[in-house]
Image (cartoon, rainbow, N blue to C red; front, side, top):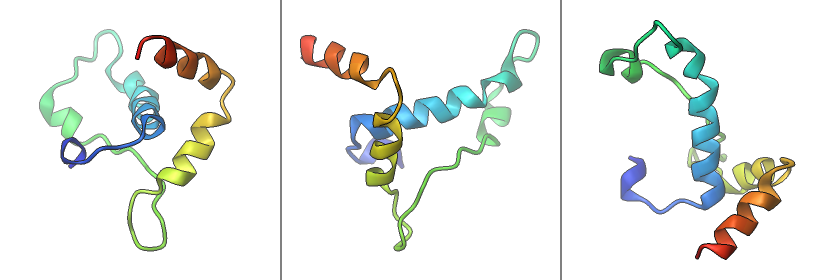
Length: 78
């Protein structure tokens, strides 16, 4: 469960990106109910041992054009 562990900021953003990728399913007129939300699948990279591969996720997220702005914002507000 995600709440029990501390994840890198890049991992948390990646999860948000993946959830936003699924949001079209619940656009205007399609309300998101708990039963529907439980069926949403997000695909995350895992390592050879079956654990979440945060190094891979960090590489992906840091290659996006907007990541420097996000990092700057967190530096200014920490």
